[in-house]
Length: 307
Image (cartoon, rainbow, N blue to C red; front, side):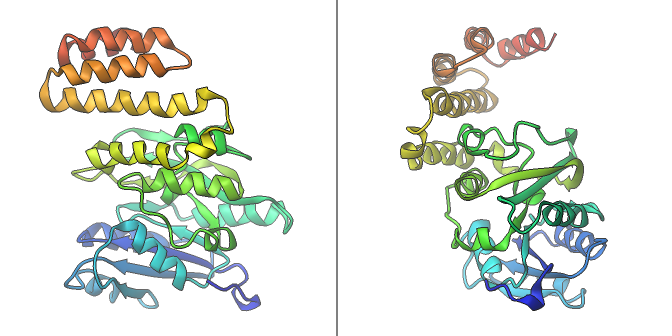
């Protein structure tokens, strides 16, 4: 990834894809409708049979890159980023779409900050197909390493970010983190640069039949991220690590109940979540007690705490 004067202002959009042609077509179309220029688009296809090539060939100027073997979206992002020529890089998931003004407004924020700005990531809010509008959290701005370690940067995710290519180049190839690629990437970015945001929902986030955040792979990945950054966690108060661990146990308990209805393992996970929580302990203790009654108990507790 080399930047030259000829590429000043160029935005490279890297789209990993794997057998989701209809979603991919919509993602590329959303890039073509951007109000900003210049933009280049690279689609990295992990399908053995070059499944996405016909879709890519529908669009003039879009570069098709075929992976010799599918090694997951993080490897595809790395391949695309290594071949990108832009000053800024947009890593776009193939099930998401960009609002027409997304890149224009993010580049404008980069440029208004000046060449000496420490900001290397500008993100935005999103419109989620199932949850509606989600705007940036004002706390996730500037030095966000603590929040990244706590895994509390949402809605800063891969598709909402625009990244300075020089910052991204120092991270390549992107590390594969067993289902928590996005979480690890944000920690790596936060170790290197500052974050800012456009306070608007400029990404339409798609909902797939099997979202990664609902998988055991994602939950195992969260645990591996905590293990991988133990040395970094030690630089912060214990509550930072505790928040990440707490939420992981909580999500594991939820998934066990979703799959089994009742589970002694789920009760244990909720108990661990209550143990590790640095704040809001009554809520987590309540969820732990409710989990003893299985899925119905959790539904009642959720309704009570939602009041």
